Image (cartoon, rainbow over all chains, first blue to last red; front, side, top):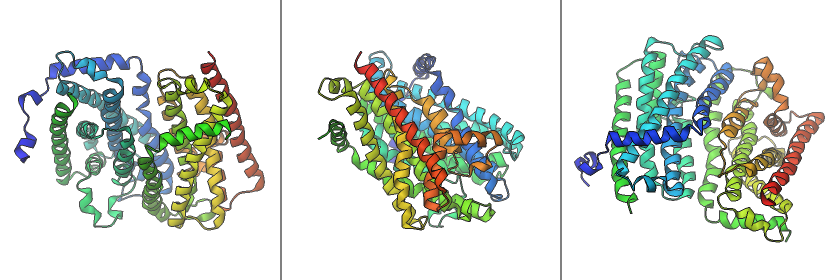
Length: 271
Length: 256
């Protein structure tokens, strides 16, 4: 397959926003009854920040001139975007696809696979955006009340839209992953070989510069690394042209994943 | 063969289909976590020179606590979705209850299966402890049963809870508001003495604290006998009460 074909979509592969919003409407109705799932999502990064950022951070002197709390917080924001994408864009959609057969019913209407996929993506993105903004507000407060300040520069305001881009990019990648995993047993591989290594080694908890130089090139291919660097640059005010490279990677990676996911969904899921 | 072992046999037969990914996860997880948090973050902590119990490097402090906490997580997961699924979606227990198996056998069998899984997790983790040089004496092996007990103390009450849920269950609140906070604030990543005053006083009432103290104490030789007795008693009582509760909730569902 040639590259141009990979990056262009046929007309029947282009989703309709109007139909996609019907999926968002459905999600809103469903989650009215399980609001706890949405609500509890706020707390995960917050608990991590208080434990690792503040508790463990008390035993760490500065990292690259900033407090450990301020170092970890943007990383946790990035990882919560990834975790949200994995649980919403991957686990949830996968189960709806293979067990609950939710989509079978929906596809009997004028909705097409691509509309459903875009709708689910928009929903994941909405949740991710709310989490990201709330987290930023909360860390600002925590920084003032308990620990060293976390948002060190006015550019931290840009971290909110940046986090939304990160969430969108990860959601598209998660959707592509959904189309690649066909059996439940493969979840262990996804978590053990993809999600967990990214979470631990993308520079959230310690600078990647501590790792062997050989790995530096490998990191340029890791989406979470780009997300962490982008958000950290903005919250700490270390704004440099390299942030544009991180942003570009996430935008292009997300777009490519989206196109590939649409194509795979349309080809493989309609039987 | 005792009836409870039939459950273990059944689960083992199912496991034969899925073991590859699971074993990979069991072996890879301790290596990844110890490299990132033990070596990576450890380098930052040791540079800071904060005093840890026994004046050990951060990796040596962290590893036994993580062993206990990992057993908690594995046990909690294995006792939630799978149990609830077999009770509601798949209705395995309803079928089993129609055989000479008693409810006690089912609960005991499921606990024995979780114990086996925990054994694998604890052994893999302890092997990683040796590989990372965090194990100083062969007495470290005593940490294996301590970690398994920690896991079972969570397994029994969670099974009891899982059996009561409808429709495969929603464990969000359990994991987000109980398991994750315990994992983060029970002294695994930093000594509980660094917590705010009120949390410090609450810690000895929570289960993972005892599991972590017991496991870490065995690895670092910092235990006194009275404290061993307290930790063991807490975990055993939790395990016992949980088991009784599980038999009760399973009966409620299966005898209806």
